[in-house]
Length: 112
Image 1: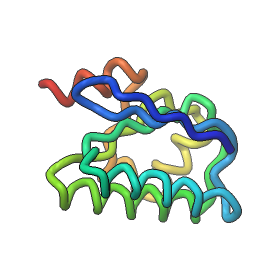
Image 2: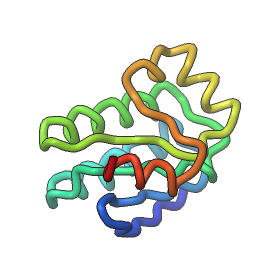
Image 3: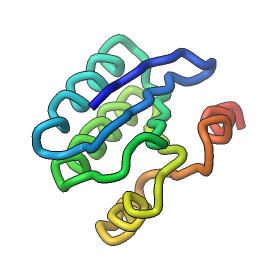
């Protein structure tokens, strides 16, 4: 899994490439929590490079969402592929996470 971070005011975009599973979820969690710890609480997860996530990946997203919201921010997901979207829907995550068609829309949503 590859994680790239980019500042795109007013948000921090985290591009994830590769599967998020039991092996990689902890790396993702640590990276995102480090950003939140640095005060970057308006996060956009660019999932355009993610074709699969396991329950471990969902737990990592939930933990980061909670941390970001505690800091007055949020975690919003963008460019979610159909198989991952289906997992998010079946697990009920679409009721607590905001999903956007693309990164630009997710970033812009913080200004609205």
